[in-house]
Image (cartoon, rainbow, N blue to C red; front, side, top):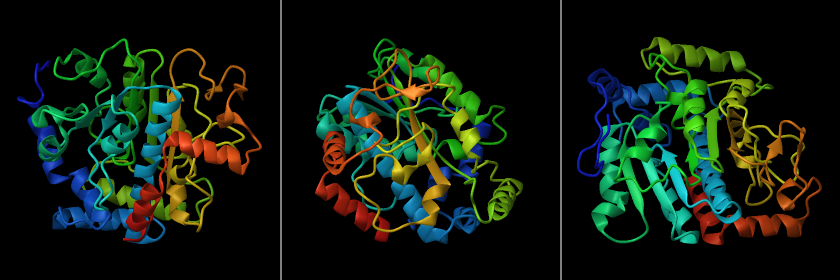
Length: 355
């Protein structure tokens, strides 16, 4: 179904899907996980089951989703500065109760001409973000759109490109971003898999585009992976209907065989890594076991990119500090400057984790 204006007329999904989201809202569940107040008793019950599977319980969950946010910040800033990407499609509207600056503002702080399109399937959350973020309603500032659509539809980008109210072109490179608040919550009765979703969306991306994703993970060396699997099974049996945790191999399949961007100057192989370790803003001050339970990566579509790993040659292209194996403080500092990390960002991050 094509809609000419998502600002005036949100795209409606089948009534049974809306009804399911009303009963089991991923946005409200995550809000409960990170200590927010925009949730119901049923959401808190689901959140408690998820927290049982994570080291640190609710505190660990808050750190996990906060680190997931900062992973996306670093990814978008790198793609803006290194790849000159000007169009960003962000699946899911951020609903983290931490007081962090919205992602589009951090992107457009460094790239004022960047176009950011949020896609949110939950109508209540989309309407809330529409009033807060959408520049079409404000008639000023950098371009931001908030669209109501199904982020789990492999044909999502086709509709966005056809929608005249969404400032995207099917000939211009796009950064498509999924996160721990989207793919893990794919409804189990949606008759598709997460790999099918991402493969279809990647197939629609123009040449030169990037696909970034993070996903809740069962670490290979988890001390009690049986507890994770049990908690996940209980969630499905309770009617929540989502497979939250996947193995590292399954998460790698989400990138549909595209070359992965090297995750740090010290990386020895391309693979999804804990979000906190993807070009971090400095050496870790403390180790958190929960970090291993959410991994992310970035892939490139099209002609070889200097910072992406080639599956055919089995090595990264020898260009630029992002593929250097040794690493040094000056080099790391230069990368962080490219990513646009600021002391104010780091300070707000510290407060968000501890809050």
